[in-house]
Amino acid sequence: MTGVAQTKIDPMRQVRQNYVAQENGRVNLRVVEGSPKNTFLSLRLYAAMFALTLVVIGAIFSRVQLTEITEKMGRDAKKLEILESDELILRTKLEDKVSAVNVEERAMALGMEKLRKYQVEYVNVPFDGKDEINASKLNAK
Image (tube, rainbow, N blue to C red; front, side):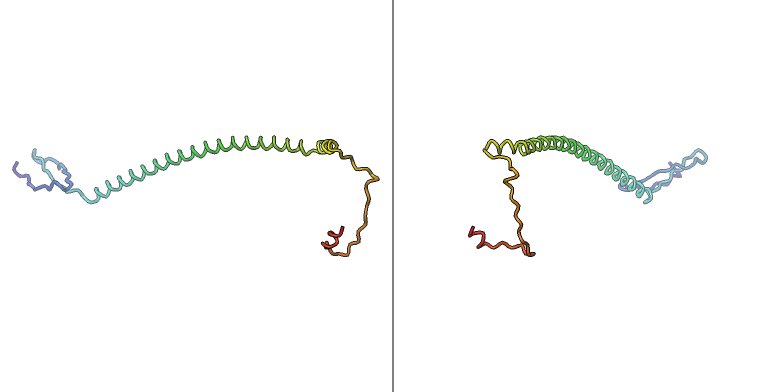
């Protein structure tokens, strides 16, 4: 191999070999060391792949969280519906117990009677603008 320059290649360096056009049947070989531009491009590629991976992981995580929250909302909505129906039942029972007819029936069962007109006595109380109660007058009665 005459005419080809022999260079010592450091194995730790990135080396790229380019073939140059043939002259008179001979191939000229040129050794070009890896330029920092190519290294920068590969670093950008790795950074872009890493960023894309993070985005995909974030999207998956977000979807999982959204699914869990949606399921919890469904369970809570069912619980709310049950509690609202229980509230309606309890209100109905309370209204039945406290209704005027039930109170009147219970009062008659205890020996009470309806108030008659002759039992009502209206009293006029003079009011001088003060709203006081004297404890000694209450105790005297």
